[in-house]
Image (cartoon, one colour):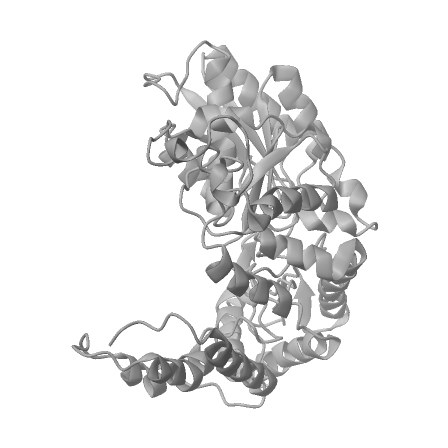
Length: 480
């Protein structure tokens, strides 16, 4: 059976209809268990293919109804969500019309234009440039790779061109930093143990005094500081580190200042908390993930740096005749295949890469700055509302004061020996029996039920229904 190479309108129409029906009916359909659908997806590799129409039919009836529940309006567990319509359509267009981001073409130009728009949206200076990658893990790796390159260049070493020996190094980040920072340190040859974990205050924000002490102690012992990482919106509670004092300290000591804004950076659009982002302009590198709060399809993150040439020095794979040698050398560009375009493959760890800029461009073109701001404000309001209801309810407790769109609450009554165990059981029942799908974290030793509101399909009815369900399940579990 040969692969189908056309008929996009027929098959995409069928899939689009199935997706519409799925989204319209998901709240009324009962949740199916794994045992109900798993047998359908077992067996051996077929010798003869079933053909395009049969595969699409299986997508319609078998896979779409039994995917993860991330597009449901009550899904608040991960800091990713089901995409909105337009970026999903834009991604589908790019998959066929521009399967790679390279050569001079309309999609390639949108890689750069959309990065400029995204940086503008998030309050970055116009001089910061970068590239897209698959997610925050890779975005942090690229940023810290730039930091490593810069730090070693200051002592006359090119760490990407040759081994850099056994020089002790350190990256400084809070206890709340995303664990991709430790992984990046490992991949970059610095070692996960090189990450200095700085304590936080009672609102989960980095303690600048402790950071200063750690930096000065390491300097006195001959350790090379590679980067200080500040976080705009921690994944546990949405806390925002004090960026200005961190950035000023880094500048004073000559250390690269990286800001991880993968989740929270778009929060700068909410004017009520914009002051919390003061000091962002001091950053040498910044990341933000459009597949988080902007509801792009998963697989879209951006790294920005002050000087993109340092990315080239850190990540270039060196020229290849089959690639660079295939294009015009005189700069005379008339058609797409006359030029590779911006050499994004030399700025990060991916050579082959889909066109991601069109996805971000489509989101910002559709909604504009005001549309995105409205979403950010609404989601922040959802978190504040949950925290307020928990504070006022006699059997609920808010464990944090939300800065962004994450709330952390728990069911709490006198006479229960282990509130952590009770709330863990409550969460399991909640996600198995209701439409509400938060996750959990721990705040100052207390197990917290943690909704993160970035889902564009969430309504006020969902938010209140969630709080009501927590109370109802907690009452059942304690026989109230």
